[in-house]
Image 1 (tube, helix red, strand yellow):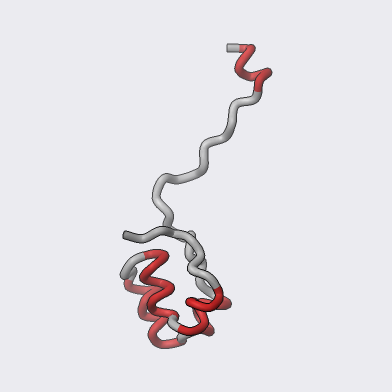
Image 2 (image 1 turned 45 degrees about the vertical axis):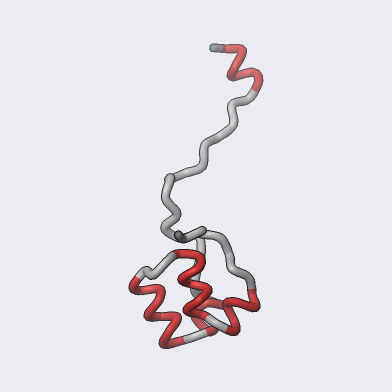
Length: 69
């Protein structure tokens, strides 16, 4: 199950395909880029949080907004 969290520099540098699989699962374009370009892709181009389900984060309601309700 993908975590969409950064696997860390050591994992991205030493085993790029493992880093992509841990963060995003076996997504085709990212996995192919990690296999072909290795750590150059995962260290400098790849965003492990891209494609995270759930959309935009929810914003907290301030006290003044709560009082207006």
